[in-house]
Length: 111
Image (cartoon, rainbow, N blue to C red; front, side):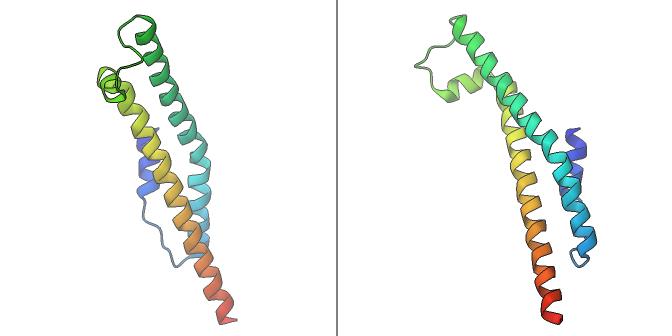
């Protein structure tokens, strides 16, 4: 699923065709719920693993977050990767919406 999301984010779009831009926004918006779910799940997995380590006495409240993340490197990587994916998706959708808005203003100016 992550490969598909990355592919959809990075696909080229004919920015001069409002219909194609709108379709791309629709595609990305449909995938956004999956990205949000992935980001939430990976953050939850990290938090659960941290709590288990705390409950087992492997970490203390005074441990730095970088120390905890080094012990939970896989969970931290997944959490950060999915958060970045979510941010990239939001930026891509926003930029396409801006392009669509610009195309609309250009069309309105021609009338």
